[in-house]
Image 1: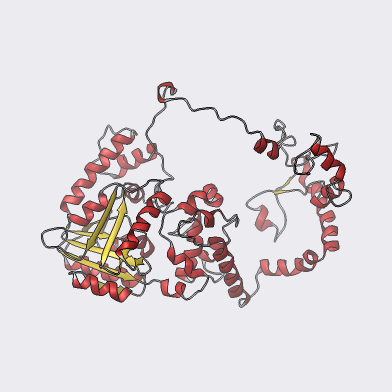
Image 2: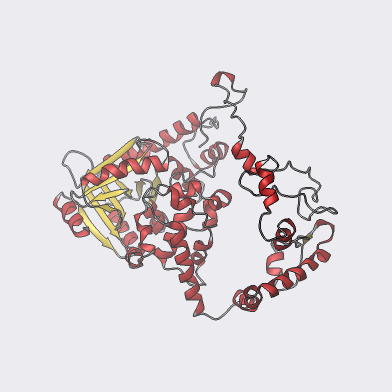
Length: 488
């Protein structure tokens, strides 16, 4: 299919280049730009060029690449990194954007406010000058069509359309996995991508081009087909599913880990669940000394990412698979402190009687926690933990003890089932949680920390008897100072 795609692009006036890795892709693109004698280019938002660090590579050779996607431009002006595949500057608010524009955008109005309309107008004016003077543009692609040699860009601002039509030379960097066999297949992905990425039925701008057309668009079109670890990923019968990703970002939007840590915590061009499975495979960074080997472990394995994926990538299974691969690689290395600790604790964790005895021993930690119930410092190797965070003391009652106290026969008593039927319990036969044992409050609880005791939470009652939803106030009833515009 790749050969068919190359033949059709070439037959329609395009020039196809093949790149084994990021370094070769960057070198090819830099050589083409240098041959045009320019030191300023415009760029369409592209994950592939982020993957290769193209902007930094070009800057080292005296070439400035101007990002034209609004969010990417904000990130570039701030010397920042994207934190989301679809909305790279989601970690910035409009007040921060105003400050970035005033500090870094030479033609920003001096009286610029943080009103979204003013900010976008300033960005539009700044970028229009770049569009009109650039003779070379670089883009990525959402999809290539083998049957026709067509390449496409899906975007929502119009900057892609400007980059794809105004410059004389267009260079597109494309991963070799972003290919569909027939033009008819575009219909499916044209619906999947915007609905999964932004909730739109259709994205505002869909640009497709096939080679070079005289008198319309660029006079020269270069297509760089990049491997950069994709062939190795394809060789893994489990991990290869990751190559089906359409970069919609839906797995990030649902992921509890991403929601709490943000994209920068992953230290990867591709953050979130998809980054946790695709980055270690593209770089083959599963060795213990490679920072990306920890990415498959940055997940709670709740499975939400796999459920929302529009192309049905089984992300949880791949995460487990890559964890196993990372452990296998580590088995061949010299054991570290963590390995030794796990090997020492394995016999205790493998036998219930030893584990029960160890649980009782851990209760002695209450003596070290003091009134606050927290241990702030411990000797090595426990200092590796307490050096960065407090260690809570063990609760006064283990789960096994709680279960034995509330379920003396090892199962739910029939009396409680009968009580549920008569309105004294839950309809599913499980008793309501009993009150905590009398005495001092459990360390770490709200009451122990001096906070008001929260109301009892009864999930079953909340589901069976939900509180009515209060309708939101209409626009005419909106409180003073509210705004309907989105923050950038």
